[in-house]
Image (tube, rainbow, N blue to C red; front, side):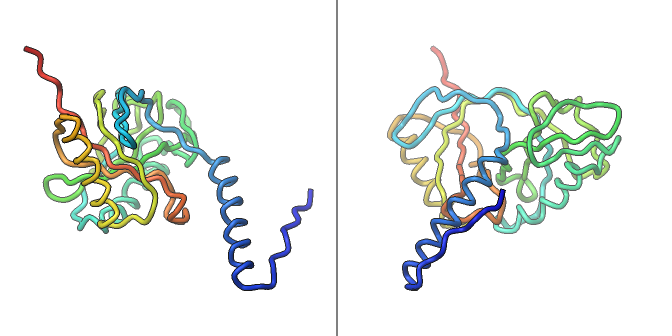
Length: 222
């Protein structure tokens, strides 16, 4: 079937608005047809626009890179992408859609979302979440010694979601908002904040899903 695109108005402002709407519609269709799998979680509490989520265990492929923070993702991506796309024993490949389990022959498995980044000793820890059904013990062994496989244990995390550019100022503003909400609710957290990205770099800034996660401290019982 032939696709006929609408004729754009002649007036520059109207043409810009129509083009923006067209791009938005096309991008939405593209994103909905290529949705990625996420780790399973339950929302156990809502604090305005803050979610407290209970995550189950899931596996990650991770690497520590020197940074700085703004360059950590770019440093880590070729290393982790090499593992995902076959730089592992058995040359098992993970496609950018949705994953399954290991077989003897090379097989395509989809990568999930998000990609996370957090401060770590020696630099920044960047993680790719592996598909459901793939564990650290069942995933293929990396050929690059910098790539580590690990099980993330079940945890309760507080999350704020936002759109916009991947910038230190945008992240810091929403981290401060998250911390203020947790203080107001008398909820303590532990460890470094985790910055989670759900979209490809070419996704328009206003359509990006970004999150900051803070792990909640276990509630002590008398």
